[in-house]
Length: 162
Image (cartoon, rainbow, N blue to C red; front, side, top):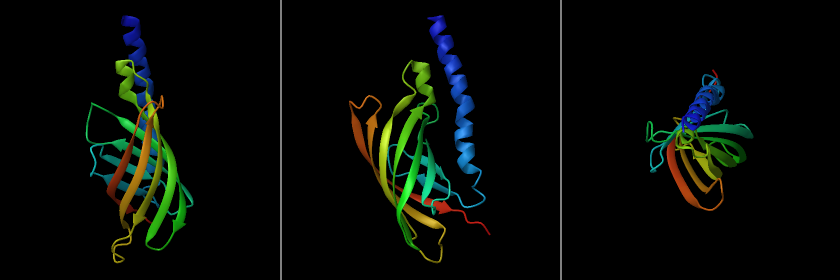
């Protein structure tokens, strides 16, 4: 019992070291051309930090925000823009979701996988950095025995280099 608890604690410490790095990497470009988005209109609201979403390929890192200690669900999602216009980016991507707190409950850190289809639209041309984001995303548990179909609506701000 003690050995199991010690193993879980050591695993959590390793994940704590990894967790800040996962969000530091995409946010390093936040003062360049990164994007920050918040998706509050769902039971699983989350904050997203993306590398340059105007590029053909970009990375989106997400962390669940509707709970402090109940879940640290973190998602990494490489995205591909399939169509870009001056007022919208249409994209697809795949993701992996993991949760560092699961190790405390002797559960798998890996929660599952998702597919993403979305759009980020500039609703007001006088505010070109503000985007409305909409996304649909089927999600499957890591064992592929269950899943859910999510839809997300949020707001994004895209930083631009001066």
